[in-house]
Image 1: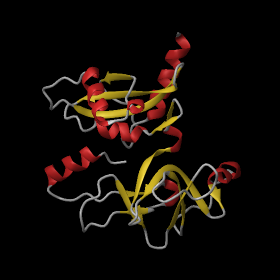
Image 2: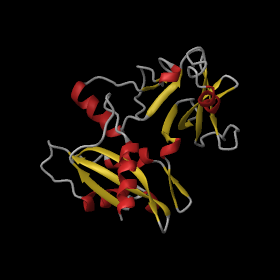
Image 3: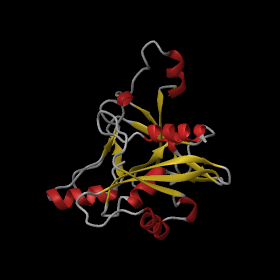
Image 4: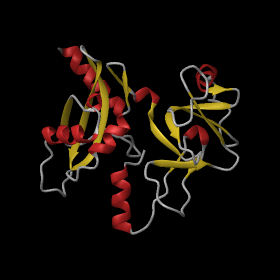
Length: 228
């Protein structure tokens, strides 16, 4: 998801709107997008493309109540038939023509959707759901933070705990300090969503297209725990 701070900065620098959309390899090229006209809806992935059906599904396999988060399922001419020579993997995501994206989303009364996070990235803290995107969006508002990534790590007391990784913004004269990040989070987030630990790094692991790889951060933490 596009952080609201990034969208705001884009408009300031370019003086042009940015229209966020949503799509996956399995739904090429797009599922939904925001109109270029009207007020900007930062964080929204817009409304479904023509000919595209969407639904938000709970863990029970039923559609969730209006406004509630659920896994985004998609049906349309752009949705794949399945993975090549991988019937088992196909069966996990295809359900009577519907593709289960693995992304948790919410929809407002006007039909505009917002991605909450990847289902597998959700952090469970003392029974409460924490979505990394929300925490990242808050931290990204700090002008001395260039990049941020949030993951869940095993915790003996709460089951899982929130951990944030931040990269210093080289254009800022203020050094990013873990204590400052925590104080900022406490002002804008519920207590259980506040990171238990903030780590400052020179860079974050990324894919060839520049996407931050949370799984690599989780893997590094798992390896650290094995050594202790």
